[in-house]
Image (cartoon, rainbow, N blue to C red; front, side, top):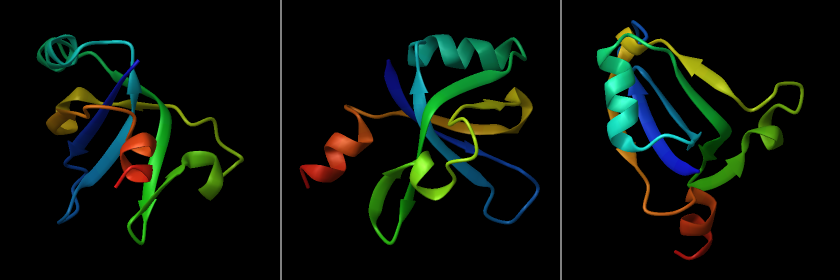
Length: 90
């Protein structure tokens, strides 16, 4: 799995950013956006006061997977490693 930060335009001033994992390469995700295919991210994470947590820490009632409509995607960035590993090593 590869880790991504996907920024979207949800109609608000700041938009919304998702952090999660995908089986697809960066190029494959970009192709999905071009082809108007929903993007799936698993193992969602979130950041609170500078610390990175698994989604379950914030809301254990939801499965930490999201499908993102490709028309809302503004940018896709790939992490060099698991964001939890990066956060714990900094």
